[in-house]
Image (cartoon, rainbow, N blue to C red; front, side, top):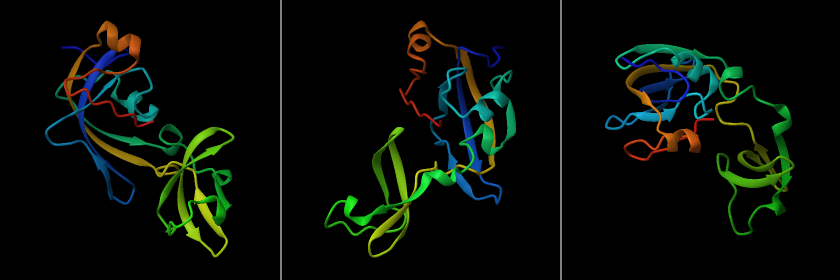
Length: 164
């Protein structure tokens, strides 16, 4: 039976919770999440912990922020003049906008709004959080030549999700 190593396509079911036990995400009950192992298609801490497992294995994986979505960076929290936002749109806490910055395109989430400014956070929503994955490996196979050259799975449903 094949074990997970670089170049393998892995299908797994998962449940992701935070340290308080709050459900953050989970795979669909009718379709396992599939990725190409060793190609940075999932967060490093999870990928490392799946290495060597095989179909049928179950594992609880704890991923620290440094091996997940990183630590929250205070420099990615800033204020923007309200005039920079689309006119006629009522800006509310929790809204997300795409913005161009020095590092390229980024997604920012509105954290507060004043009369003249909008405070935003460009950190990943899971930055700084310890992640708890309950994982069940459902399939492991060698990646095809096309998958290896493209760097991702071309799985049965063609679903490609990048958790990075």
